[in-house]
Length: 224
Length: 224
Image 1 (cartoon, chains in turn blue, cyan):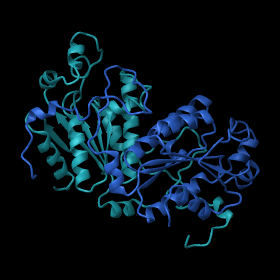
Image 2: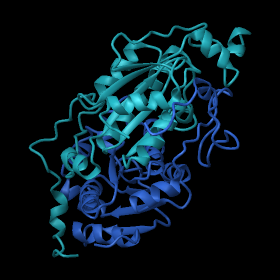
Image 3: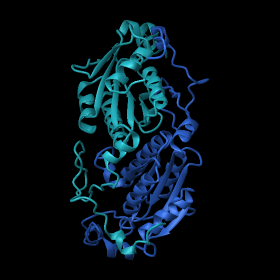
Image 4: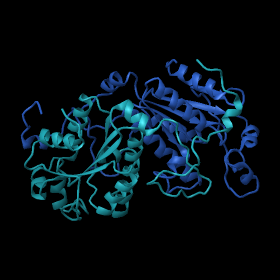
């Protein structure tokens, strides 16, 4: 330690900003006894340290459209470029944070709400958070956008026609849905609301995964 | 791009490991149609890139014991040392991911479950995730430990006698609890189960915040 120990009294003082107002994009907590505790590492310091700001790269599209494949290659390429990136994968989250949720419309909504909140936490920590969720409802995606730091949310529509996705059917889920073994399956028996104005749209029936990754990197002004 | 575009067919192949078995510490999802999607950036690569492995530094203790204060100073010090750290703060999470939860025993349990899951996501992404939650129940903290990557969870008991915490009362909550305006307040009208074998115990009525930070850094084999 290069500094003298702080007196124990300092533990009483937590105030590091003018007030404990919550940052934008956050809800009012259930209890009025909850304040916001500001850290002392600023977003600007994190950006300078990492060489890029934190942000959310939100991949949306049908099952089988290629979201996870693109996310995995994008993360690897960003890592190779020295960027700080991570993936929030829809299937993986359902093994952990969202293991209590099913596929009803209410549960899907809560699933995406939590994903948006965690993506924001990652962006606040300075990471490029790549998310891979079907996220079929526009209102849910809009909530994720509002939850993210302002201007730091990119909605990327991973678009392949449902016929192509059904032909790929990497997990055999379309076949199960056609046999009625899966209810409320997006694209077959539940709606997918296409993005109105995504920051980027990628037709994965026409583009290779490398081309998709390059397009996203270009949109983020990251080059390789 | 230094490589030719991959053919679109590659999008069908997501398999990057022998199977889609979930890593340890994860629950069985509700649906049997959910697999685990492995990324291509290994934990070892992240560790080499960051200079340290990801882990969870779990601060537990009474309200007013100094968890947030220690977390904030620890994060800043780690940042100054070039480490990749972030804070998951109990109060802050209740503005976002856990804004739907109250303070019943069931809601507290769910609050800590989610915190443990998010902490693991951060550790998997290579960060040192410092958490600041009262987390009064041993079983909940044990769940957080089991959720974290094996061997990468440090339970740190931020310990000040309840009389000291009540005297500090930085948010006026003990006064409210004494007046009966807050029910189930930890240390007054709800239990705090002290850790049996924490990796570290810090008496914040005797130590300054700088001393606490130094002790945690030493425990992590990080020096300043």
